[in-house]
Image (tube, rainbow, N blue to C red):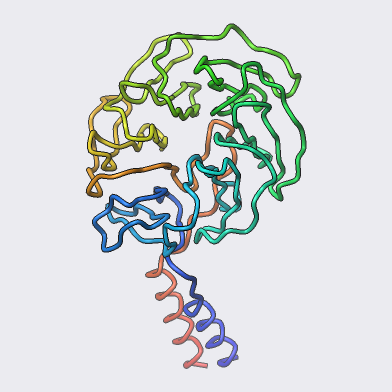
Length: 302
């Protein structure tokens, strides 16, 4: 019995991975060559408790990760801004597979299906990269997200016109909306309450269901942002990370980093409007250490 418990203790404490591993609530930061955390031109970092942590992935020749989504098992999917591909990663950002498709924008539904958007048809994949459907969205979808009904895809087309398309019935929903001052390389997300956020020339715009628009600025270098409940992560005028309260519009955390170029942001484990279950929070090292100590004490007393 003692040997078994000690073996379990070693197994708990002895697991190691290259670089850091994303945990629930971390901010995933793509191409953070801006940061002053002891490394430069790295491909990926996470922001945790106000500290930028290197994921241990060299910048070159790895891709420029743009849009990201996280499935219910904690796997990360990201599009490559230079190759327009989708790659599936482990929580420690080790690549598992690359999908055979052309995509820049990315969305995920409650079943875990991935929607790739690259200016033409929307391609629906399963989590193993198999093509489930080709969806002919009018105007060609560049970036978008699903509403809570799991069927309505809200997207920006090649001309930066906001459109809605029902991917379940293959039908247009409502009228297109133009002249929204969309950023030249946009990103779009739908919040849990149905508000549409997209990167614009004056910051991140929030379009409510009643048509009201609110702007959170200033505009970022690459239009990247990430929603987290009633907060949003984006960058300031110098492209440093900051967190904004969506009610007051005030900056409540940051800035972090020293400025440069942020290509993509996503909060690890935060459910999207698609209401997908979040991955289980990672156990902290302190908890694991306490558990290991307790197991050793029990083993020695037997």
